[in-house]
Image: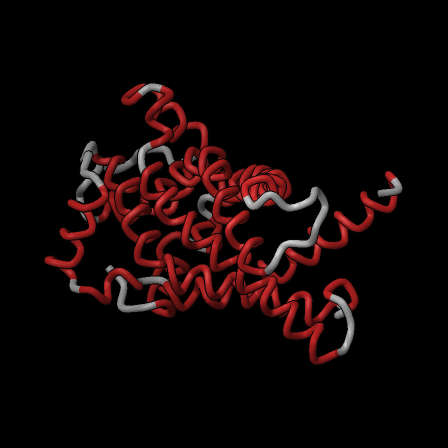
Length: 261
């Protein structure tokens, strides 16, 4: 329906108003809170798992690649927390377009609770995990790049500033987080596109797997369709992930100092 980022923004604003730009905010917030809570908890535990597998001493500093591997493993657990809220968010954000396209009946209520009730009524509790396979397929390589690029960027800053990673300062830390986020999305965006299509199409009762959906997009819309929406995602990812890692590092440092670790 849209030619690009600006056309989508203007059309949404004209048709639905400012409120339309915030469709799916509640599940998006819940998704980010739950995903990052599970992700960073698992990240620490998975670092211990990597040390155990490599027979390293507990507490020994891991290399950037080893930390990337721990982040990739942690993403499997965060996918379980993320998938249900992502499903609700995607359906809310695409409700207007699905109605206009005639794929769902018009006049449906588009609130978080109405979507939750619809999923439970038609598919039961397991319905919230439609698109789980695609989510895990996206997260494993994505978070390898996410944590790997973040740690590598911090290492580079520390080397050039002649300090350790914890002493590089706020701006280099935020840039490293933004760079990690950019690497994640550049690698996994086509997978995310397929995952979102699966979750949105399930609104109309269509149940197709990852490969069928992927090949359907290629056949009907071409390869470039897999990167639809990449521009606003990249605009968002730098400040969002910069803030995320700033909060993570300062929270971790504060809690470590509080418990005297």
